[in-house]
Length: 221
Image 1 (cartoon, rainbow, N blue to C red):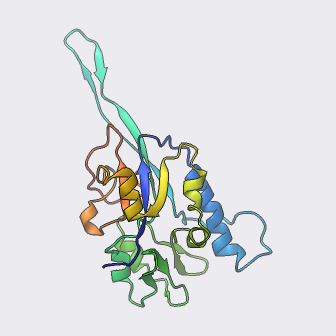
Image 2: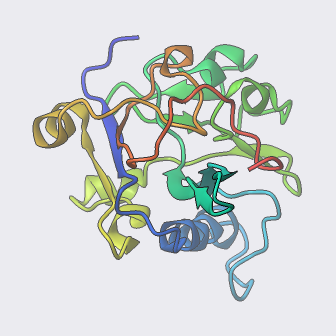
Image 3: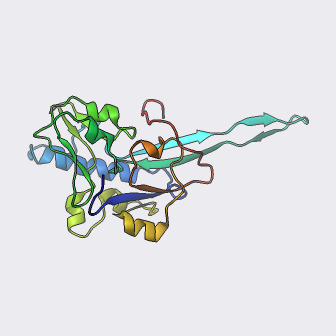
C-alpha cells in the first residue's frame, strides 16, 4: 500500500525506564476521546476496562550459572518497550475488517476506525500482532490509537511523545524519522516479525534486545 504521506513512531529502548508516563497520558486522552465526547457529564477518567492504546512491556531473560569454585555468575537482564499502533504499511487489521470500518488514511497513513461502520466483530483485533485494536465492550465498537491526528494538525506531537520524561519516543513522517535516526535496529523481542505488517516503527535496540518473533499477548508478558 503506497501512501502520499506516512507518519510513524520512533522508540529508543535504551532510554525507556518503564515509567508508563506514555501509557497513562494516552489513557487520559483516550477517556476524553471515547467517553467525554458522548457523555460530557461524566467526571474523571472512565475505566474503559481492557482498552489501552499504548502499553509498556517489560522483557527479561538470562540465567545463573555455578562455577567450579561454587561461585555464581549471572546474565540476567530486563528492558522495556513502549508499543501502540504502528500504522502499518500493510495493515492486517484493515484486510481483516469485513465492513471497511478499519481503514488507512491517505493524507497521513494513519489507521483509523469508522465507528459508524464497525459491527464489533473483533476480526481486526484477532489479526493484529501488536494488540492495537481494542474493543470498547460497553459501546460494542472497536477503538485504537489514532496517532493523535488532531494534535498533528496543530503542529504538535502525540500525547505519548510529549509526556515521555526521557524523550524515548518520537513521531513524524517516516522520511523525517529516517533522516534523523536512520533505519534503526529492527524488531526486538517481544515484538513479532516486521514482515507481517510492514510497521512504520523505528527502534533503537537495548543492548540486550534479542531478535523479535513473538506475537504480543498481554497475558504472557
